[in-house]
Length: 611
Image (cartoon, rainbow, N blue to C red; front, side, top):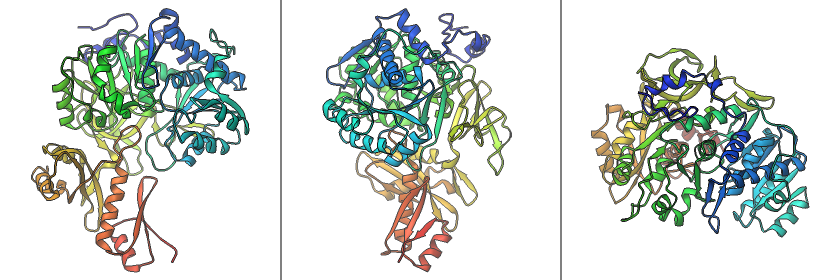
């Protein structure tokens, strides 16, 4: 039975729909040539329909599709008037706002948008904008995000090729003076408002193969890698997300709380709704971290008739109870991804809210999503069904991290993806470079998992998260699930701690909702271990688990903590620091041959401080 709804937006609600969708070649889908054309089509067809409801920005406002396109034209024309040539890069250091959507989509209309997490280390931001050759920076002013303005100025001074610095939400007179002292620029809103809003002033229009955006990958140590996206990749992703029941289609309203330097926010709560004429409710600069807005979360769902939202597990775990009398019947699903989903978080949400939590799977290197749970056919343990025109398989690998063969359905290997969403390779000095990541068109994800005969994907963890204990390959997730089943545990993460005898041993970090001893939790996990090697060696109760800025669990910091604790046991009273270098813990020690020998036995990297 087909669940097609209209000629160009078929819905994949059960696996049988996949071959029906793919019977029509993607080239015959009449997709827009660029993200600019995507928005222009919708704004021309429904200029008065609401595109953005802007919360958390002072007075709540709503922009229609016509107004959004006008503001995108004005932003794009501002960049052109500042001398940007087609294909030039515009760097964005902004929290979420209506102006951020306009600045980003305007950048893609005439050049390449490069949104960057403003909280990254200053030098990393400079390194990213140097690699992407950013010519114009659009940054948050002192009135929008205190402290960021001064940081942005220092970044600008580290970029000799910069043409202009534009300020959003600044104390305009003060910020503009600072900017003009070093380069062209000023108040983004005022300068954009002086530009034509009914058209692009340049005759150039982006083509499907042109670059649309540079996104940095996750991780908070080392300079992040840069994933280039083409217009074809982003337009395909916007279209295909609209084919999934988990996301807002033409009659939907999506809620946006993740930051727009992240692909999930740009695609799931930006381009996909915009392509299909849906509305977006933006939670503003703080997003899901806005405590005032989150306290009234369910009333926002009610007021705007939100149909779907996308969040990471930590957000779901902290949602307030649904108040009596609030009508959330518009909600169809909660979409979740980016981190393993604890079983209890899913159960609590689905029991309280009475809608399914639909998992998805994706990478920045494959635009955004590669698998999503079909609304009428979830499978327990799966992160979803492959999306139309994308192919996913598990492969075996050799010692040099090269694929050696395909795994049959159900067999675990490293997941590989092929299709219209796969990026051309990380950005290098001479452009995108596929070396080491793409083999015969297949993107190697680094994720471990298997794919069943119908194309459902099952994730068992990151290859780099595997704990190898004396020859046992231990997946941390079942150990985490066993701890999360304890009634007093609210969060759990398991990492490998270096060990002289076994190479690595699992140690657990947990957050609790009421007091419980570490010994009790250690015994609990030991009884439920799948094998003796999977019993954690220690359980540490902590205030909170470290996360990246988009809420993903950041395990390298826990590994570093485990090494610190081990050092305290190996050399009590010896001062030693542990730092992360490219995601790996390195001990900084005073000269001490015995301690150095102990660290060697435990395979812990170290550097000796000058005496």
